[in-house]
Image 1 (cartoon, rainbow, N blue to C red):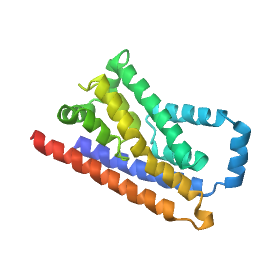
Image 2 (image 1 turned 45 degrees about the vertical axis):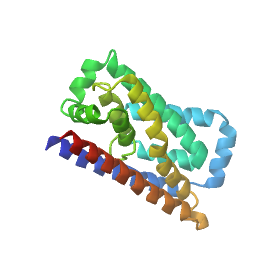
Image 3 (image 1 turned 180 degrees about the vertical axis):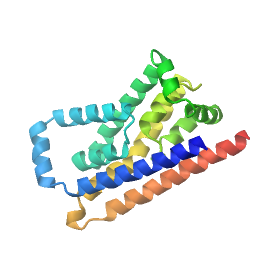
Length: 215
């Protein structure tokens, strides 16, 4: 019951954070943004990666950050820089839990990481890949909690690498699409919503299938 309540709360937080992010991005002046990017140069993606990494380590909802990446850098560069930041944060958090921060994280996530460990025993690499596709589960929470589980370093890294890009792509596309609404272009936005539904549906189906086999 406690786990279900936590999932419901996390879902509500993610939905609210996404709605707020969409509202803020919708008011962005594209021309002004491009001038800012030209002035910042290489510092723009560096600052974005830094803020994204810190936000993820603080277990803040990653969806608004993904939307911001799309709004600022567009689809392809937005996906690249967002994936880079997400992977850096994933490695840092996992390393911290596996080394000096194990006791701290175990107390912080008592009652939560055990459920993840049970599923990882069934899926390993493929479970890590599928969970990266679910937007209702905070990226930072998975990073820290995974360090307490029995998953191997290799499976964690490979599963994260494979799941991060398709996991962030739809939300980066949404962020980029919202900046195009003023031009009447909604096809990109509709495609992003469709892709999100497909990824969430596929990841949910896979996790339930693995759970059923384990029983």
